[in-house]
Image 1: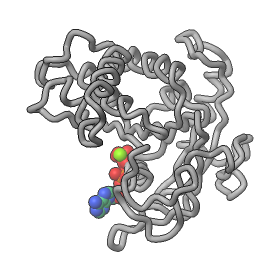
Image 2: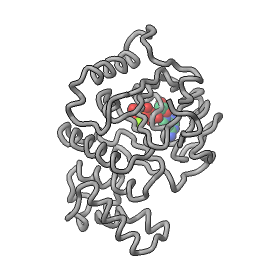
Image 3: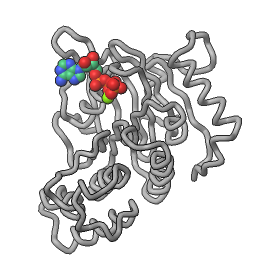
Image 4: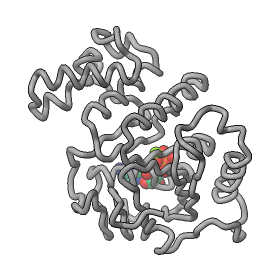
Length: 268
Ligand SMILES: Nc1ncnc2c1ncn2[C@@H]1O[C@H](COP(=O)(O)OP(=O)(O)OP(=O)(O)O)[C@@H](O)[C@H]1O
Ligand SMILES: [Mg+2]
């Protein structure tokens, strides 16, 4: 369990309303400085809204979000987001898409060159620097989206269903690539997914949200060893966790060992 002092991100009693619609209600959670927290919850419960609040794109009506102790009131340079639908600029080639954020920050040319080259290699797109997004497959575009986030060397990476628009085989490949990249450069990550398997595979913890409004229903510790190889999905520990998260989401809420929605459980 992480103490708040080690947390990179803390969300405390977050409440958000769109008009008459309560979307987030008294939601608290935290993410450690090199921890992946997977978020699962029903469609429309408020996962994207939560990420947007953490990313400084939406403002809470009550509660507070802190990154390294700093209250989030606007997008911070230390936070990067990866979206479901790639979000690349169609008129820029791969190199320029990835270099965009660093150029905005007026990073020195040599540094841009070094970091963009590194990020492109990291996601396996070497050789495609001059290609435009429409010349890349869906999986390659998502890799490019990832490289664009990683090149900023974020302290917190927000991933909103990053692999859901991708075919099953490429998705599996990307999951393990993402894990390999994270092993090389561990950072704090919030990883929203609809796939229970993916949530368990990627996460150090799985936070199960219930809606509406969204609140934390359960938090599961994923004590599977890293680095995570494909064989982990066949282990009893993985299968048990997957079942537990499934029950948190869809089953009756009998006391089955999960830490329920209370302040103690969410201050980890
Ligand atoms: N800009 C907006 N204005 C008004 N209502 C919104 C806005 N954005 C989202 N909502 C509403 O807030 C609720 C939560 O939406 P959100 O996109 O956060 O859900 P989600 O959990 O990410 O869903 P999904 O799993 O389908 O992506 C929904 O009821 C949605 O209709
Ligand atoms: Mg969403």
